[in-house]
Length: 440
Ligand code: SAH
Ligand code: SF4
Ligand code: F3S
Image (cartoon, rainbow, N blue to C red; front, side, top):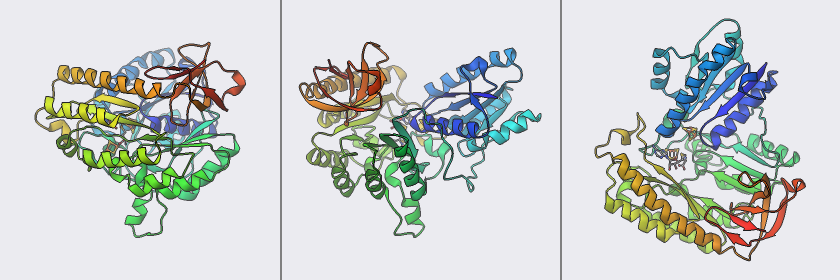
């Protein structure tokens, strides 16, 4: 039997798909070359914004053709979008052609459910939130030979008022410290050079145990320090961190960890205090600025990127102007910018004063233009500098060149060799663009 996985969504979903592949392969399945060759098709879904859900509805619709061509093919949808009861009800009403629907808590049971479908049961829906027996260790099919993702905490307790994630990924559950460390050691043995520690809010690592009275439980700083000791791992990244939980002590600790300290991603969301409060973010622009100042003071070489949402309900032109001013002040290396998308079941979706789409789009354009000019200025500071780059492979846009990343997570395009893939190479920067650096 052959499987094919289509993944939507964030890095956490990418990694979940690697685990689903690992689980299926342990159960004897093999990867299919393409959709048509697959006996089982798995769609790993996302619901962070309406645009993601629309794309997924389209993809699921197109899979009907696969069922016609190969009636025995098993179609399974898993992941965040499927964890929503409203979506499952809609799927049921529409009599969609899916055989298996699993939420975020149950996807490790996929082989068991496939066997049940093969035995004649279909459709099967399991979006139960029971995760009592969720395993700490699961097989994983590593999609990259030099960089790997490692789960450290599941779920989120923050309930930002716009965000669906806590509703579909549940409350925070830290992963066992020794399970994480043994995974890091075995990854290092296979030649992995870079690891990405994953969680919706990595700063919360261990807090669930502390709340239960385990005062000696390890925290995120302990994890970063221990991970830094793993020989062979050269770079450690993490995704995402929350500014509210970014203490001065944590910045101090990171500043002493060369494998970690050159890159920060610290989602700001808005530069207006009133909006931040309505978003339930738990920090003010002044708090944010204080962390940023400390990062810049301790590690002036570090790059800092952020996430921003425009058009949150009630955001006025003056509020948005405050975001522009604050972004100009913070001088991020890059920003991931999003149009606010109402998510049903979240408080923001029913707030009065939803901002019209045309206004959101116009604001987004202004924000992107401002950020692009700042990104370019940052990149120009690299001209003539020597950097160390972890080589990723051929550039997608220009196959005459290779692409890699600096320790500050900047993309560098250069003339490389195939044997350099997965290696650290030293380069001198000769060109700077908005989104990448050049060394040729
Ligand atoms: N835990 C991560 C968030 C993951 S979602 C964090 O807090 O950083 C990634 C980004 O998507 C968020 O930072 C936010 O900027 C954006 N986002 C989340 N919900 C959104 C919504 N309803 N509309 C638009 N953007 C949203
Ligand atoms: Fe969503 Fe906020 Fe949790 Fe991030 S911290 S996943 S934005 S609720
Ligand atoms: Fe999407 Fe779920 Fe990630 S909603 S952004 S795949 S946590």
